[in-house]
Length: 87
Image (cartoon, rainbow, N blue to C red):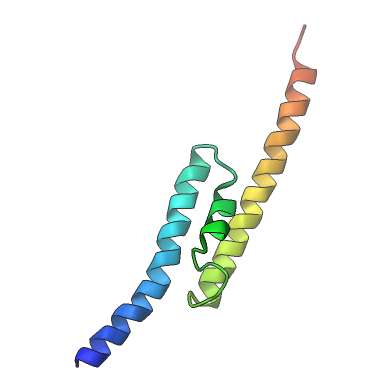
């Protein structure tokens, strides 16, 4: 029984750790930090499939792609909006 509980705890930890990191990155992204996914990768949050499972790795990859797109759009807006300002 103790072995089963220990194994369950390890499996749960391998999934919840990257999910918590992803939630934190989402919070940071909501505050405008579109480099949050870079910090996840640099910190080794387990979103690369190394123990987190394919589904969590796919979610992390999609989140990173979304943040990259938002970063690109923010950069374009920063260039475009001053051009459109009346003046």
